[in-house]
Image (cartoon, rainbow, N blue to C red; front, side, top):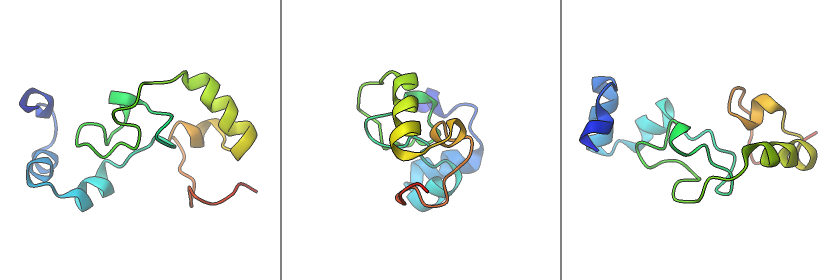
Length: 93
């Protein structure tokens, strides 16, 4: 893990070492929409263990994006974490 910390800001490194989950969640929160779909190491929270999909096998992102667009009303940007939903638990519409 020490090599993984290289390149991170000193504040981010300190938060990881101190287990400051509140700070980490505020500055490197999970952008995966659920535990079934994960960006894996591409998720900002993956490094500190706060990724919802951490530990699950990575899935076919395109298939999940189509499913979430149809079933949950997620835009492409919302699904990939480019644009956040105001309330990720709210029903679309």
